[in-house]
Figure 1 (tube, rainbow, N blue to C red):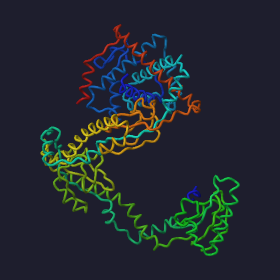
Figure 2: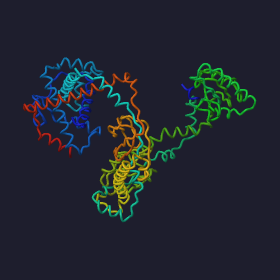
Figure 3: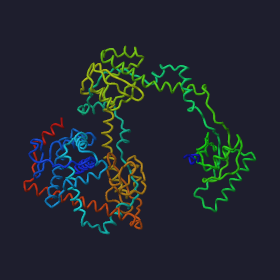
Figure 4: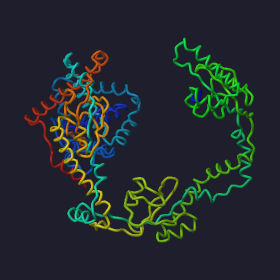
Length: 638
């Protein structure tokens, strides 16, 4: 209660979406009128031609760089995604080409008006050019051409939307699809749980290792020496004099002044959301509790049993120390008017009826120096510890670069921590530092013998490392990877057990008339029961209910599965159904119509795009320069 007082392919479409989002963001600038890239301007920098328009290597590279920076696309899949980028760029140009044939035109004036209406449309031309070239990594003409392409695409999208009709039957079907629900009993066959029960003998593990040696290698590792500046240790070495403490106290006295405060407890009988006819009864109960307290009843026990303040009831009504400004007015006026141990009458606030007892009272005061001396000393140390850590780390790093073999003596001289870790590989914790972040780990992994890292931070420590030896990657011996072999063997066996148990349970269900519990017992698993779930819901341990397919239209008793969601396989049975509440269809009708229109528009747009591409390819107006594409792929593959 006290708290109340406180004031084409899916991948291609995703990739296209990312590119268009980038273009939309970059349009927040002033337009310099210009033309798009034309064929012949860039020689072997052209990956494709559509009519007189070209798709350039720099244009594709911008998209590749953005994808790599955002970690959307792994570099090792360059062979797959670069051709997709090229194909999508060709499709965009083809749509724009056809839009112009249909009579659509986007003049420089129209583009200028559009872009000037955006938040950053007032940037002067030189700043605009600098922004496009440095931030987006493309030329102004290429950038403007992308904007034109987007405008043409929007025009085609508007055509696709025109004349789209969504029938009442389609709306009703979609509404039912969204809101029909089922409840299922199910068995989840989870390989992770099965793997925990797999027991393999040393002989079996060795046999698994011998059969799968190619899966096990020891990565390149490094022996590393470290010098560490530990905040706690550095702070211990910092001495703060009494004169410093006194000077700080005298110049920060306001920081150590405390306002008048009261330690109090209360009982609340809430009237919030209660009918008016009950308020009198609640007040009468409060008056009765007050009589009991004045007669000697235990205030704390009565608060625990009767108070409706969730924040203090369990603590006997204790509010702790409070100051002015933390409470509603009537409560505050009362609590500061009472004397220690005094009990109030029943008072009223917007929350209900209260009985208050003040336990202690303290006037406003300046905390004396002796009381705050330790706090000040800690504050003064904290002010200087970080500067001291950085100075020591900088000094150690400078000396270590000059004498990489002297890490231990340098650490000892500067009273820093010296540590070693043998056979370090990225991701392995270091005793003195714990797990390093990805950047620091990658830095250590790249060092050569005798090289010194830059200073890096790990938690509240600053560190630097020098590599003393590098151990090349090599095929593993069984003793080096026994734990990994055990884990992989268990996982492999568990995956096989999933298939066996799922098939056995499914067969038993067919034989025993749908007795799921008997089937679960036979395979050593438990039966779970879901809540009512729709297609958009999630099922515990399984994942999206979309995996269940068309079972939402099936009757009670229908066997479901086996269905696999990720590594888990599920076998179940429908035990209840809940049809969509058709009385609420009107509330969702508009959103459903909008969604269905969008889906139909997308389908029309894609059909239009495919038709345009097919026609232009047949007419010889689309040309791909495969040699240029292959060179681009090779660059990013390496």
